[in-house]
Image 1 (spheres, rainbow, N blue to C red):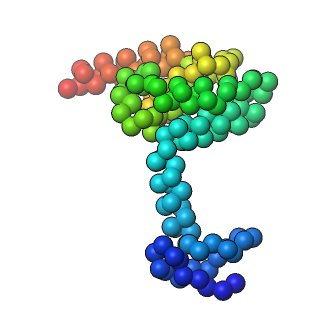
Image 2: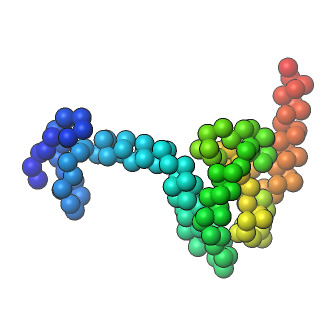
Image 3: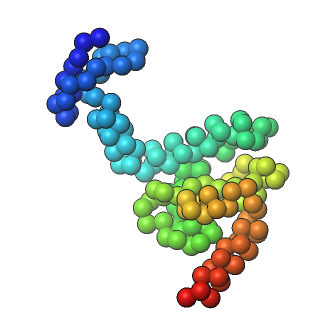
Length: 148
């Protein structure tokens, strides 16, 4: 393949993949996709919802997908993390949808079982139920207060 010059940054690059029609380098394409993803909150929320429904085939066989538009509305309308109450000041960016009762523990993939939460709470909650996680979170907050 012949080397080309990126029309965005001007650096030379060699096109890769099946189609070598790109006029911009991989870094510039990636940066443009990243900017586009974060510029449209509705499109980002829909992509998160569709991704969650797609992973349902592996994580919760037999579960019925929730319409992506309803999950996107939940992401965009939430004002704070369900668990730690951190404000959702960035229009849902950085926030996740979590199953209050995990699919692995018999929870359903339904709008009533979904909660908007921050990334840290979602990762810390992992496969625990909402009650178990909230008890742990209260204990962690109490330990932090007593250490100060």
